[in-house]
Image 1 (spheres, rainbow, N blue to C red):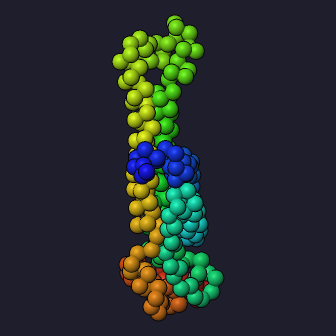
Image 2 (cartoon, helix red, strand yellow):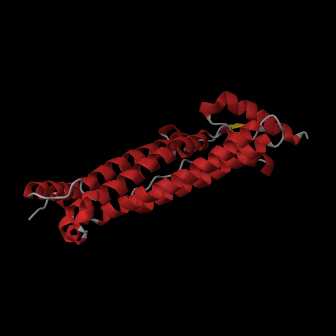
Image 3 (cartoon, one colour):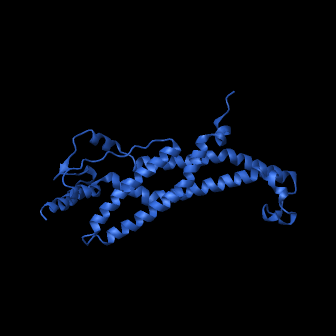
Length: 244
């Protein structure tokens, strides 16, 4: 006999892996926000000095590592592999390769996700998972623990206490209903997060097409078309390193 997925969701491994991701998403989001806000503001404040641009380049290299870690966590817990964007061709001396992320649009998209979206989405996922599951389990199991509470303190848990059959029916019924609804709420939230990760941490169609073609170089430094003007300016700055 076929049982609708709505009634089996609380007992599936997928549900608890999505819940685990929702719980992990908050500390990850806090870490990414703290790291890249600190490094980003420091880099930009020092951009007029010699140290500013190298620090910004190092921050972008770290963003590549963090975006890969985010994709790996999502792939392990959500069962959805998110491929990374193609690595642009890096030619020339190590000095020039070090500054390559400055002209890579995919790296800047990763910074947008890690700095802007990871923390608020992680907070929403964490709160939804913890609050919904706690309320659902607490309400549904009320008959198992409610009478162990001293009568004078029962009002601290459920308003003025549970005195009628209708109150029992509402509380336990809402708890059972929430047990079956919570997995779908968490699944919808994680699906939205996956959508953002595919858009900001994954490759675009244009990047995949360009990866199949011969990379276009500007003085030995790969320049993505979306950043053509800014890329040329930075490429000239990097190329000037040869002369110094």
